[in-house]
Length: 532
Image (cartoon, rainbow, N blue to C red):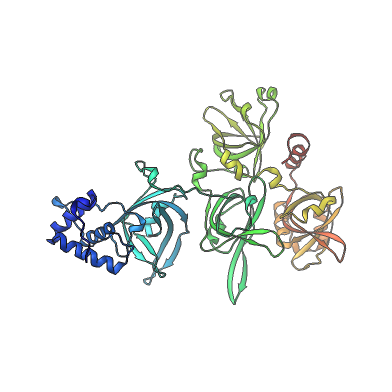
């Protein structure tokens, strides 16, 4: 027997729908409930009476007098049924998947993106096609989302999805929305130093401190490409391997913030952990939500400041501040980011310089940039806006993370580290024991001992070009020795102990010429200000 509730037992929305369906179709109330009963039998017990009535109204395209379309009420996720049209729903974003490009049969390119959305009754996948993706370009986990006009379909596994084409209205965080209506979802972000062996995918954020070249490989007879970053936060760093999303990888640069949704933590064969970026991952370079306190969208790095730039936005960490009496004499703060150091002074119009403390992370908006004798300096004036950022403090690397310096006499400490840094003077060159066609072996002395450093020839060629030495790395060891012996260099990489020959060997990842200012800062930080 078909259940036919009394009209007075229905809520106001269902009463409206019932009357409109009767008016549109000429069916009696009994006939409508019979039709709804048949739909519920076919759809199973998960379809509620209200859901079935909404589905019938949607199928019939019910209209009110004067040509106005009846607005189907907002649904709960539990009431969704395959085949529903013009669905209206409010939920909260739980997961964001990357934009995927594809080629249609006619040769045109299309794009699609998926979001996982929840309400208090369940969760569902939103599938956004084409320009509808623009509506969620700035979406982040935890945002409320409201749609009007979606279509409910089943995926290949029989799970429901809501498909959104460009005609669907999409709103993020509508101001009039009752926040209590939706469950809370917090964006759980981990820094590189905070990750462990996770059973699920994680969301990661940090600052890029190193970027490799893209490398080709073969697996199962197929060619592929990969690259890796060193990603750091305030207390450590991890290697992040990009197996997919290499277009984003190519755009990334040292000093950029990067947020990566849905990445996986794996054990490295050599020990330690690393993060893998796969197809389901979603990397975002310099996400706008973390720069909310900065005017405009362009963020400079210290290395990018040059003459001709009058105003800039930056994010820096205070290395040290002068004594209060020195601050009153307009002595500058010394600050840094992942690309270099810079001093910050203040004009007479800015009186807050003395209130910033060592190790604080600052967001600098619309600050003046001055150059004297080719050296840049930031000046805080009446147009500048400066904020102490507690949120970014967690993800912004400290100097000890950027420069994990180890002396050669203490090289055993570097065996357990992910990476370390060695500074020394070149005292000799010889062929590498690893592969003399790919590597050159540099003998380095830092005053506490000597170390053999294996440097790839392409890295060494890059150093020669940076130093302005007009020579090829294939010129021979004698020619290279004449140019390199006696130079102070900084090497960044990993140490191993050669048990057969009984000494430590350094596998170099990058090499640069030593910066006297940075060397002085590292010494001062250890001996005077603070240890981290």
